[in-house]
Image (cartoon, rainbow, N blue to C red; front, side, top):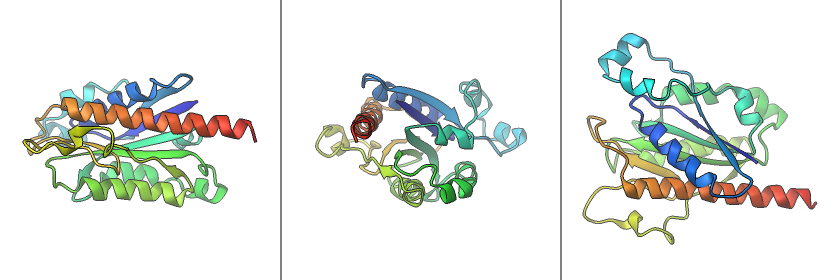
Length: 210
C-alpha cells in the first residue's frame, strides 16, 4: 500500500511535518510512504529576499508531484502553508490540474488527509485544512481526520501555543518563520500518518475480500 505525502513549503516547515507523517505511516506493516513536493512558482529572486534559499535546498532532492503521483497512490496526504486562511497558491495550482481525473473518477475511494503550517495559533490553519479537505470531497475520496481529542493531551496545552487540530496536523512557525517543530507537533503528525495508514490498510484488505 502506497501513501503519497505531497507538500508545498518555502521555509521548510512543511517538509519537517511530512517527515514525521511518513514515520507514523510506516509504523503500519505493509505500508510505504513517499514524500513529493509541488512545483515552486515563485522566482529565485523573491525566494532570496524571503531568506529561504538554504531552507529550500534541504528538500531540493525530492521528486516533483505530478498528476500520476495521486493516481498511483492508495492514500494522499496534502500539506501546504496557510496564507490568509487558504493553502498556498502553489498547492492550489497543483490541485487545479485534476479536472480530467475528476471526470474519470480516478481518485474515487482513495483516502485523503491534510496538514498545514501557520505563523500563529489563530493564523487560519483550520480554514486552510478545510479548503484542502474540500478537494477530497469533490474527488469522491474518503477523508481521514486526526483523532487527537482522545489520544494526545498535547492538543490541550494551556501554557504555550501548539499546532494540532482534528482537521489535520499543523505546526506554528512564528511570525518570522523561525520556530522549530515542537515535540507535541511531531507526535500529532506521526499520529496522522499512522491513522491514515491504518484506515488505508483496512480498506485495502476489505476490498480484497469483496
